[in-house]
Every structure is written in structure tokens, then in C-alpha cells.
Length: 282
Ligand SMILES: Cc1ncc(C[n+]2csc(CCOP(=O)(O)OP(=O)(O)O)c2C)c(N)n1
Ligand SMILES: [Mg+2]
Image 1 (tube, protein in one colour):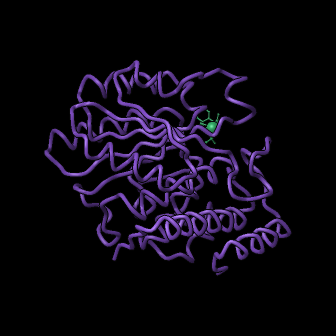
Image 2 (image 1 turned 180 degrees about the vertical axis):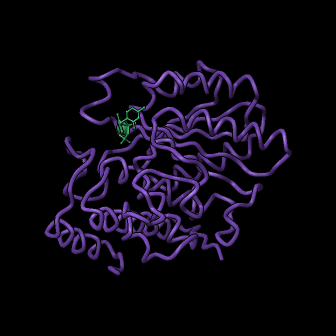
């Protein structure tokens, strides 16, 4: 059964649970890409808790909405959303990155129920998502493809090849999100390869693009509902203005938190912090 969180407070609670379980999973694997995982949690809550059409008992349905997490290093955010939405048992989250397990650090569609595309090599998820969107159109399948890119990932030329392709093929079933958390692996995106206006760049490539606060569940939900109601032959882009490491005082707004170890002491602090936010510490 799919749980819908139409009330924004409930949806934020779902985001906080996704955030806590992501930290717990990364603690079990002794660390992870904490910064880019935590900036995604509100998007994950809106997708799986409000707007997406899916049945966790039938993850391979060709007619359901699909997600391509092209910034595949952030798998734990997606795994937590999938587990909390019934695709696999919640307890399995602490097997993250374990040999023989179903939850590799980067997403693998052949291992994990609910993972729709294998990702991790930045840029490549863009092309596969556009191909999936075109495939749905050719086979007259229902549903949309939600592609999630990082802002550093936009430095990959392959992203812009995808944009030309999507416009040409009128892929209005492709919704691109950019997690604009302002940092990439080793610094601020503006210092490494500046992107002044991401919305304007996608608009110039023929997309309909908008920028919203990526930690405001209502703003994300409204933006997604708007683009889904507008099937006009134009691909869509929603730029999410976010904060790397969001929602955990140890990481929010800090630098050097792209990939960190999570010690037992840090986990104990996280438990206290999330309990204070009303998250049930399981
Ligand atoms: C083709 C490729 N080059 C390099 C990497 C190594 N890498 C992993 S994450 C990352 C930074 C990505 O930055 P961004 O897209 O902004 O992600 P986020 O900030 O959300 O973590 C890099 C360079 C990779 N995964 N793929
Ligand atoms: Mg980034």
C-alpha cells in the first residue's frame, strides 16, 4: 500500500525520517556521501510521499513513474525513501555497501527493488533517463521519468547533449531536477566551473524551467504538480536551491562534507537531534 502525505507537516516529517535513516545507513557502512544525500531528502519525500505513481509490490511495472538518480553516489537517500515506502524492509538499510547485499553505495537497478537505473558515473544518468522517456513515448507507456542531477554534474557535457535530445524529441514526460546545493566534491561549484543561471541554461536549451526552494516541500510539490499538468511537448526542469548537508547540525552549510566517516559518537548525536525533531528512533 502506498502512503500519501498530503499535509505539508507530515511530508516534512517523512523527509526527516528519510534523512535520519540515510544517516543511520551511512553510519552502518562507516560513512558516505553525506552532503549530497542530505540535500535530497525533501525531494525524495515529495516524490515518493506525494506525487509519484507506483506500487511497491510491482516495482518493474513499465507504466509507473520512474526515478533516475544520476548523482548515484547519493543512493542512501533514495534507498531510505524506497524502504520507507515499502519496496524492501527498513532493517535492510543498515546493510548499505555490504558485500553480497542489495544496497551498493551507488545505485544498481539489477540489485535493488525500486531502483530504475544504474548510476554513478556522472552525466550518464542524463542520457539513460532521456532514453527511458523516449522509450515510454514509443511504446505508449504511462508515467514520467524523474531525472535528478547534481550541480557539479552539470559540468559534464553529456548533460547538455541530453538536453538537446530531449527538446528535439519533445520529451514532456521527462522532468529534470537539479540539486543546486552549491558545492561539488572539493569545493563550491562557483569556484570550480561557474554556473551562473541554471534555470536560464535549461531554458536556453528549450526546456521550461523554474527554480524553487529545495527544502520547502510545498514549493517542490506545487512545482511538480504544475509541470505534470502541462503536457505540451516541452521537457521540464525544476532547479532545487538547496544546502549541502541540510538538516544535520554537524554538516549543514559546512564545507568538506561531500564524503565523511560517521563515528558512533556522531550517530549518538544524530539520534538525539532527530528525536527532538519528532523522528521515532528505530
Ligand atoms: C564521470 C565521473 N567523474 C567523477 C566522479 C567522482 N565524483 C563523485 S561525486 C562528485 C561530485 C559531484 O558533485 P555534485 O554533482 O554537485 O553532487 P553533490 O554535491 O550533490 O554531491 C564527483 C566528481 C564520478 N562519480 N563520475
Ligand atoms: Mg552539488
